[in-house]
Amino acid sequence: MTGSDITSNPFTDNLRVVLVAPRNPLNIGAAARAMTNFGFRHLRLVNPYDVAYREARSAVHAQEILRNTQEFKTLEEAIADCTLVVGTTSLGHRELQHPLRAIEYGGRLIRKHLGSAPAALLFGSEKFGLSNDDLSYCHWLLRIGTSGSMNLGQAVAVCLYELIRKATASKPEKRKPASSADLDRLTARLTEVLRQSGYVHSDGTEAKIRRLVRRLDLPAHDAEVWLGMLRQIQWKVTHGGR
Image (cartoon, rainbow, N blue to C red; front, side, top):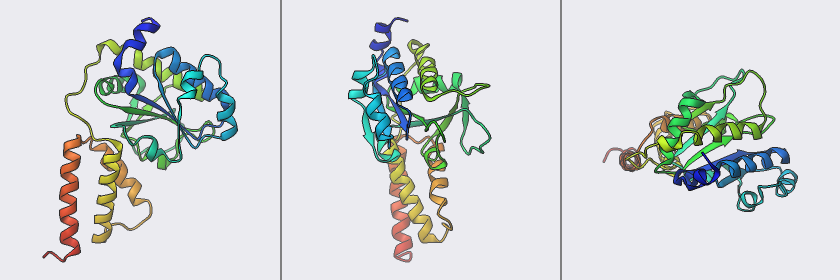
């Protein structure tokens, strides 16, 4: 597949590559160059280390990507328009509470989704990776299988290559998935209803609910229906069943 072939694929415009708290300018530049090479355009940074970001903007062959990069204070803002959010991990020793998919299978799912709706691919900081709170915004995780360490720039390049290598075989989804903003509204409403009913007992409950809601894989229409039902339940709880 040539560079022009990659650029002409409409699904490349639906991917948001999101780097959370990156600190190394070389890695930011390498991620931007990988995006340029594989035809992806939208790079988003969440709380980047300011010095690293300034240095990265001078990266060779990636100036256009970095000029158009969007900065966000929170991950929630960075993925608000996305209907699929996938975190990346090399596993390590942490306990994961999400469906975990190998890069080959996960890549097929992301390609299929990109045919019709925006998706975010999350990469954590070089030192700590994605935090548990970051992971709670993900629908599922993509495993980058490696026996050794892989830096941030390499991880981005591997994932993007997997996405484009069979892009022509992807078929768009027929239903419109719920956006991350829709799921956040649903999470907030459900958490509020559960708190009023006495179910919520700890600060970590909302993150658990957020993970649960994302695992439901709701279409946009179904998310609105659930919101409507929760509003009615909340009204009943508030007004004592009248």
